Length: 376
Image 1: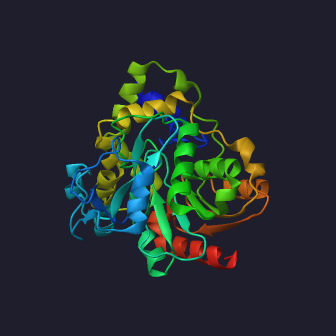
Image 2: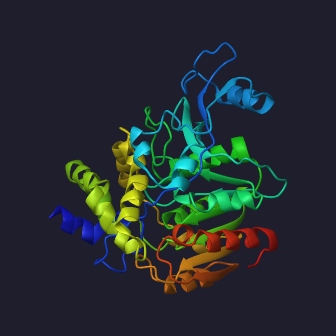
């Protein structure tokens, strides 16, 4: 019965348009590079936590000097990652994982900072930075293959974990509803980026990007929306399910068999060994003890419903779509483009729901050309 429930409602749970209840859908895949500090330290080597460390103090120390930080060796994973990171074989995912760091971000729903996980750029430019979001229940690792290509091209690029997902420290769990996710991203932008950004969102990340661009237009110069899940009306009745049923569903959501099955829908013809490794990457963040409660918080809020916001987007937008997407139909790319005020579509052949994973070179080139020339 539970599996039947998920086949019927997974689209809503994952934030996708439920055009087909035959497909069990969600976006995980995760990948990326990691640039990281093991722990914040004062000059006296006293360990600092989110509760004891002021965000403004952190910024002052970080911007004025790096002597206050103990920098990890290049071949080490951050100690806060689950130990299962060592089981991952994908070299891009491993390399990016070594660069993950946590930065303090003050959010309105807590009286202390959230140590927020991200990939910080190794290069800084005067041009608008590229900020990469991820999809539902995923992490910055989703960009493992594209991020190094953007860096090689000299682009200032961030990859940020959305509040409630990824590798942030949520021991003191904040609300993880839509408003809190938006506020967290805005506070992160205000503290560390401070310039209009090219905001890139795949799948449910596109809904997050649209919601953010409409509510904080001064923060976003352009949008890149990839296989966008923007026509689902939240998660519907699942928000009212009994907690016991939802908990059972979340156990299924992070299970290896389910995620292997989803990989068959998301990707085209990947070997079993690759699918297993993708599954390890995709569920790594689910191994934190707070993952269940953070996801429950999001589900209870009803999820994202941005259909009514699409026509309010004022920024120029690039819509990228995998032509063989089995999760969200390709024709919705043209609908989205027609409803946005200033947008155009570029399709990628022989790609499913995550073209930035299946064909990272094509996606990186489209993003770079769009950032530079406004067209591609």
